[in-house]
Image (tube, rainbow, N blue to C red; front, side, top):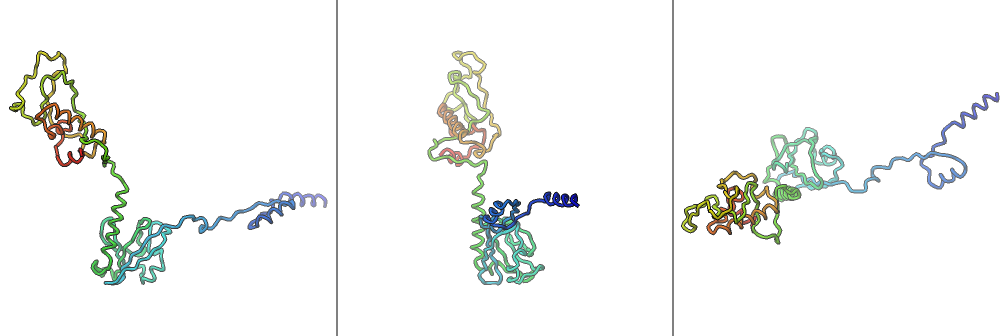
Length: 294
């Protein structure tokens, strides 16, 4: 009999301590002071309390009848993407059924598309969604029957333009107001020859060597030092390796214009067009060159 009692006491001592759930701090401390032990189980906080930031919102602009102002409803977006069936109050008040069709404006294509209330749409925060109710699949509202449609379409265009302006193009560059004029890019095929080693003027592509202003000069001069670099290869116009001016950086543009100005200064008959084609090897467009050099 004593052995059975000892076994009962042993099993009672092996039991886990009682679990205390939902007690306040004072009662829990009093429980510990009385020699008790406990394990506190924390209940998860309601999602309503964990949301420190408001949900993103959207605006539904709905034309329900001809020659009437639209309904503008603002709703919080709880789930992505969007389905009108997730908003039963809107569906019931508009008397829509699962078989109803509704016109939805696609801001990307600029066309109206026929959706159902279960159609899934990918939207963004603070977006305005344009809808037109249809009597049937073949009968809907014309654009001239919807008041304020032109203003809403203008807002759609303004939003798309501002969105594209936030993403800078990788090939777009800007010149600051304090940057020096005449900025261009040297061609990777350009040749560098010391001035004292060239006893004759440099002829650019398109120049006439028999010009009456500059008499022809022999290509060989006995006073010139004997070196393999004295011969200057005749320039041949080659297709541009880069597109002007989008593929050039600001530093390349500056170096190119300096090289072009130096080339024009060495030859009195050289023009900006000749210097541009010599440096860049591309077609000269005055409006583009002047805009980059200004």
